[in-house]
Length: 630
Image 1 (cartoon, one colour):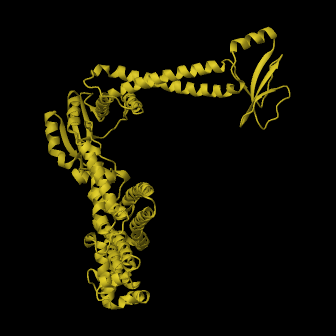
Image 2 (tube, rainbow, N blue to C red):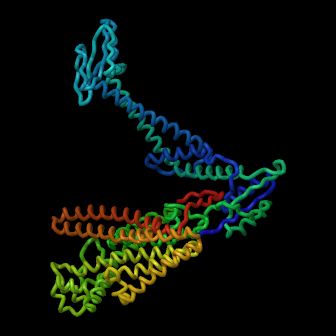
């Protein structure tokens, strides 16, 4: 639920300001308006954040408890210093590896002996690396050939300068480099072990970070407002939810602070405050992924949650996958019974999606791609099977063009007296082609039906704000009634709800005409001549409606892959088929989850938000104490 925010002025003595802000931070209902810029994060907070990030690179050890607060700075310094040493060693080792590769072609030699030879002989020894495509001077001695560079040595009275070659330093021998690499590795391992040991302070540092962030928030609020009466008083303005005004009054009275509601300036946009609990809070988390509602938007949290769960379930369309998801969710609940905050809400969402997949998968006969016999009890609870039989009954009763086409293809259906007999009479190689064809068409229409309902609800929510949406609701509903009639398609409305095809089609056409007229009239009344452009919205509505076909397409793709996996496994030896089933379904589940999340949210954030979401809001950020989620 979105709660309107009120703007309040707070005035008090300078001596009372500190107490007022501390109590306000405990209460957490006021967002103070900053008139002066203040550093959001202190240097202490930054160092704590860096230290905690550093420890996340290493496996955690047993957590330390009852650590004295005064040890905090020394622990943070130890982490920073050790990690700096560790990174320096990593850089140094990379440099040693480069030197090792450069000197390796020249073999093992003693640098000191080489120096003595040069001093006694007066000769100069130089080592070069030259591209294999380059033509070396004849005085160079080839030592080794490589894939990209050839190695050469020069012995002469004077130094040789080769602009196209890389001169290799011989201040260290290859044996010395090996020793340094070994020492480097030992020191890096020591640093790693020490940092791993320091991970035992992770929770302690997190507590310090929360304390430091709370202090930062308090310090930021402390500079808010303006001094008055030569610094003896202060005034500050803040936003307060209207359902917290009584709590605010008690706070002001206890702190000896004067508070009064003031008018919101023209053009000033209040922050957006959503107050949700339980499942609504889960929906709010989903809403936050895309955007923050404006201060005038209705809270879409429960709408997004409900339809996201439905869309995800329709895309997965497999009760077997849903059962696996549910087992994983229950296992996590068993292993982590004390989850709180965001972690618990994510687990609740996962559980909801698991149950949704089981229910929808049962309705559409999705069980790991395993074909369910027409007489199996699971067929009796399948909505798709029920509707397919109803559709067969309808065509058999009316003897329409669909029936005639089927009769030419499957002459044996002539003797059928019921839709079920019609389906069974066309059986071929343990398959029921009429049943499969009807089921596919029903699934496609269900995707569009759900999409139309979704859009109609969106338009209805904001119809009083945008009057033309009243006409679009009538137009879209009429379009759903008229299109099947226009293209001679047998809609669910005919064989399930018993609506007359011709009457429904004519009604739909009239609704489209009336809706179009209303759109134009209401748009002109509300927006003047600019309202004429509202008719162009029909293109957007058509595109948005057809976008819901992705629910059918993604479910179909996942179902085909499941069936393919099953059929492949049937033809392979048992040990290979087990491997194919495991890998195949893991891949299919992964693809299904990605598609379900991406497209399940997309249909809410794009198609649905077009008509009932303004967005662009600024979240309500009150001064409040942070607490650690377990």
